Length: 149
Image (cartoon, rainbow, N blue to C red):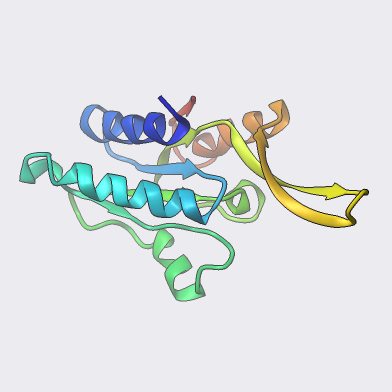
């Protein structure tokens, strides 16, 4: 099972088994955002209609500001939000009603190659400090839960 599969399973476990509260999902890039969004929508269709009350509002820096602002609006009554986000949420943003955090343990970092003189973004395992910081996010607003996979 890869990180996206584990993330998807965890989203649905929380949605089906846990109490109210939105889900913050740390992802490393836009490709993962698009994949997880498609997978969530595909799997929601397999659930009974009463359990399909899950909305996805991504949050990353290049997203237009009007779309970024959607994460701060409450979900309709009976719905839960899933917020796929990059590390923008670690320091600069606090999202109300987030009770659950899913952290697959990967981040993108800037890597400089002195041989070629080129910087590139690579996906690496998160540091212990980042994992601890992300673990505290739900507790800053509501008592919550954190999963790392």
